[in-house]
Amino acid sequence: MKNLSKSLYILVVASTYLVSCDSKLEIEPRQSISSEVALSTQPDVRNALIGAYTVIAEPALYGTNLVMIPDLYASQGYVNWTGTFSTYRDISNQSIISTNEDVTRTWTHAYEAINITNTVLGALDVFDDEDDRNEIEGRALFIRGIMHFELVRLYGVPFDNNGNNSGLGVPIVTTPVKSVSDIKNDVARSTVAEVYTAVENDLKAAATKLEGTPYLYAVHGMLSRVYLQQSKFNLARDLANEIIESGEFSLASNLEAPFRTKNSSEGVFEIQQTEQSNAGSSNDGLATFYSSYVNQTGGDVGRGDLSINNAFYNSYTSSDKRRTTMIYNGDGAKSGLFTKKWYNYFDNIPIVRLTELYLTRAECNFRLNTNIGDSPLNDINILRERAGIDPLTTITLQAILNERDLELAFEGYRLHDYKRTKRNIGSMAFSDPKLVFPIPYRERAVNKNLEQNTGYQQ
Image (cartoon, rainbow, N blue to C red):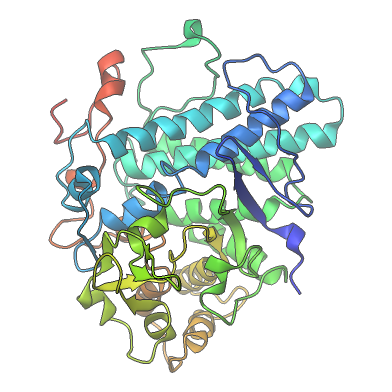
């Protein structure tokens, strides 16, 4: 049985703090502390760090946008947006303006989380015990690293493994803003290469600080993703293999389990929601947008704003359980095809799960002509056999990428995967400027050093 202490989860509580149980995040809820307040005690620092985890679980980040927007942005032949929210409709149509509220709130919430972690990192001297200090430092670096990573993938030009990556990324922020006097209105954007270096440095430092703790696998899972995005295949492969071979995680036989079961056997890093605290059940939250069905009490669940395109549905083999058990015909607010991954308002949100790591190991081994851990063919067939479809007898890169598209559908990978593999998104080239978010207007209004992305006027 999986050792539950080896994965990292976030449990959202009362929208102001996070708690968790077992030995993963043994933190009791306390009153939230703003990053503008001086952190002079250990409880202050711990509570501020809890606040940072709260922010990344909110709808602007992993609670909705960082999962939904990358798929919505690459919607052609994949998903259909039928909702009334113009911010998401414009993203789906690749017709975004710099005042788009979801572009803005994703940016501001990510930097809010970064600012809190910077404040925490500046207050580590309150810890006398080295183990305590290392844990807090590592967890703060983890959040800062993954937030810069998410930002550069959306607001920066695509990383090019054949280029020098001197194009515009996002600002790298490593000093806290504790008061109005700390605000700097002259920060400029770093290059894509510089941002990725900063992300790697934060996550590698976090891994060092968190060695031997329950948090290490989450750090390595995200770092493997960072390496894959840069085509650093040997590094991505080795971290993916480490997690797979650890024996701490296993593929669930029930495809719904990672999205329903707290502490899923394949959940390396997940956000747990409750009936009391969740990303939303009205105008926010993944299930709000992806679900459309009538529940047992006769009530509608979800808005049904994001349905599955028929062409993508038909790309699954007719007997594939990922089609027969994980996709359903909506009978709620709207009709159409919908995913069961985001089905109930209070379900898990897996950020890193074991399936991704099998796919990463398979792709990297294939590209490098290696068999670290197992062969690419065997790794892909493990997933195919779980899905109830025939195993392949030979393997190609295209087969691996196809399997990745099918297995990780609707989990926020599509835009980023297509950019890194330089595949067209509909009729648009992966490098089309319209597939990069604008720098929000409100940010540039106070900081003229934030150069706007190509194709945006303001």
